[in-house]
Each structure stands twice: as structure tokens, then as C-alpha cells.
Image (tube, rainbow, N blue to C red; front, side, top):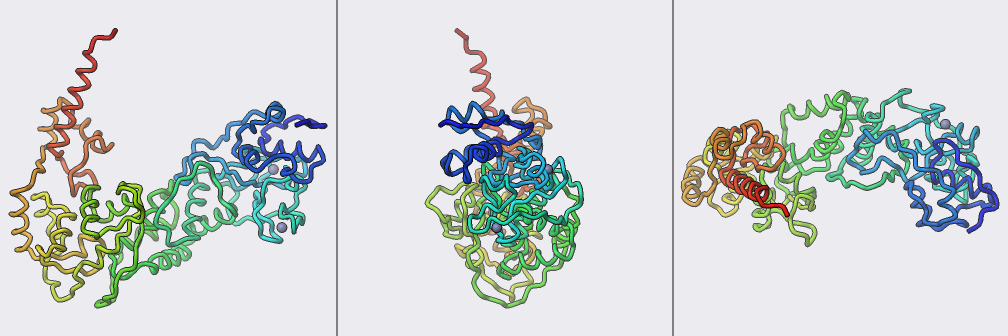
Length: 458
Ligand SMILES: [Zn+2]
Ligand SMILES: [Zn+2]
């Protein structure tokens, strides 16, 4: 590959921006006449092309500057789709590498709103020579690109823009039940996604509308916590707690649950990640697997059940006896002290209900614990029966500390980091107990480590 003209790189110029300029200066009207699509993609990722003559000309990749912002949507804060500042184009014919950060909204030099979409034909822009002519890259349009008006305040820090982008994806899909992490950012129409997210996070009315839309998608047969998976996902990953929408979402947790009584239709499939299901039911992975054996949880792929697998959790609700005549029975929440004292888990309760060993009634309320009512006498019988076969023993933290020689503080941090598994029911790490088996495992691991350290080195 030979180039008649080889212009110099400009400061802060992106690799792909330079290649567009190289193509333009050498008379190409489209970069696809010069490079193949896979090579263009590599350049958009900020990687060298693999073409020797070209790589010798390319600028060194400048650091993105926004690396401190972490967003669950992508591993690298680097967009592979183009955005341009019309002033940068007019003055220097340059596309800076900073414009490939998904966490900026305006040009860092001119404060212009970055453009990613043609206002005439609504096509997203793609990497091509016409970007440097400030024209639409859609071959059947090619009209001049116009400046964009902004709805965002003048300066929002990158982490707030990250929140807006994340919220914007939920704003456009109120029924989103899972998040997939991509390596590079590839969001078409990113400007308007950020704007949608900003409106959702800052306008109380918009947040309430979104909430209603999100919840309406779910069956009324479900407890509230199961109807608010998108809200929980959104809240879990927002970096700032100061968005007005957070207040709206918080009120939801306290609202009285008014269910249309007697609606007895079946719950349609409800797909989410296994780890979300574990959290909602308050069960461990092995219990989720037991529910799967009873066909109360259905995996959608042939993969073994693990935390990342998508599962359908609707069969549980379709199997529960929807019953309003047994309302005088206590809820599981009211029976918590008893359940906790006897190490009975929700998984065991569900299993017993479905094998007809526990009389129960289900009426959707706030969460699974407040929605399920069981007969206390039946429960005591079940506890007796299970106690004889139970192997789960627990140790207090001070007992565990004596056995392992570790401080209680160290044990707590091991538990929080998941190195020691927590006990069932211990959802918020508030219990001052550890499982006996876990402590034995830890002891074994410590011994092995000591033995390894004592081995002679040769
Ligand atoms: Zn600019
Ligand atoms: Zn166009």
C-alpha cells in the first residue's frame, strides 16, 4: 500500500480520525476503497491496523483520560462509533480521540454538543471520509450536518454522564431484566440516549411514568420486588445517589401494595439472571438448583445452572396455591425468628409446599416473605422432620476465631468477600455466625498453605 500524500498527525487526533484524513488527502471519497471493514473496526478500537505502511504513520494512542469512570455496560470506556464536533472539523479537520469516550457529551475544547446522527435522515453516522466534510455518511443523503441543541446543563462530570447513559438504556427499555457487559461501547444515537437518561433521572414526573410503565409489564400475581427488577438493576448501578429519581424509587419500597384480589390467571414467563433470582427468593445457588429439579425454575439454555445463566422463574408462582381464605396464617416474615433459629431456608419451604408437606397460601405482597403464609403447626412438624437430617451447624464468630486463629474482623471481611459463604437468611451480613462447614474448609486451606510454605525450596 502506497500513499502519495502522508500528512502529519495532529495533537490528540484519534487513530481512525487520522486514517480518514489520510484517505481524504489521497483522493479517496470513501475509506472502504482504501481499507477493509475489519481493519476499519480495529482502527476504531484504537488499535494498529496490521498494515505495515499504514501503522508507521499512525499516531500513538493517547490515553482516554476518562479511565477512572467505570460503567457496567462496557469494559473499555471507548466507543467504536463516531461522534464529531463541527467546530473541530471546520477549524482543524480533526476528530480527537477524546470524542470516543462514551462519557462525554460536548467537545472538551469547543463545548459543542457532539453529533452522532444525521438530523435530516436520522441515520447514525459511520466512519467515513464525509465526516471530515461535515456531511452525513449515509450515501443516499450526504447533506451537511447541523449543530445540535442541548437539553443537558453545561458541565456534567463524566460519572454523571455515565449514569445518564446507563439510565437512558433503561428509559428506552423499561422492561430490561438483565445487563450484558461489552468490551467496547457501541451505542447508536448515544446523544439522545444520554438525554433520555438525564430526563429520567432528573424529572420526577418522567420517573413516575417510567416506573408505572416498567411495573405494568409484570403480572399482578408477583410480589412487588419481582415486578421491579428493572428498577433494582438501575438503582444498583447508578454512581450518584443524588438524582431526583432515586427519591421516587425509594418511595416505591414503602408504598402499600394494593393488589386486585382474586385475579387468578397464570404468570407469563419471567426471565432474568440466576443471581437476580437468588437475591429475590433469598436462596443460595444449590437451592436454586433444587428448585430447578422440581421444575420451578427453568433454564433457557442447556448450560449448567450458574449465576450468569438466564432462568425463567414464573413456574414457582404458578405452582403456589393462590388462596385468600387462609389469610389468618402468619407470613414467612412473621415466622422469620423460628425459621432462622432452625435453619430452614426459603428453598426448603418452597420444596415442602410443592410436595404437599406444608399447608400454605400465597397472596402477592411486597416480597416473597410477606407474600407466603404457612400453617405454623405444619411448619413445626417440618422442622422436626428436617432437624433429624440437618447437617448445617453454625458457629459464633468468637468460636470461629478460636478455631482459625483469625480475628473476628478478618472473618467478617472474608465473609463479605464471599471467601466464607454466609448462612442462609443472612442477606445483609448482619448475623454474627458462620457455617461450621465453611470454617472447617478455611482451616484446611490454611493448613495446606502452611505446608506449602514449609516445603523446602530448591
Ligand atoms: Zn471541538
Ligand atoms: Zn443524512
